[in-house]
Image (cartoon, rainbow, N blue to C red; front, side, top):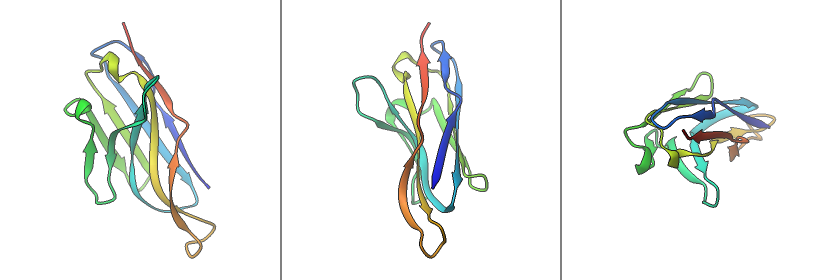
Length: 124
């Protein structure tokens, strides 16, 4: 079993900053993609920022230049630094990772894991 635990959400004024963190734990034999998605009320879940399986970073156009994703492979963590926040950034933010997990390496397989989400509210 793999758990992704997010932290760092909250209420912030427009123009402010927040830092989200996500830690993966459990029987992990590898992570080849990790990142953040968000879902606003009445909207579909969308990619915010991620490290892809090819080792590149991907950002939604709406957050480029404002958000920065970082990763600590040794600790299986990913962070999202969010600056110049706007009201339209309000959403539940979910951590996602493609992990290799199982009771042993030989029996492990790759699958997508999701955190429970953390609320980010940008409002004055």
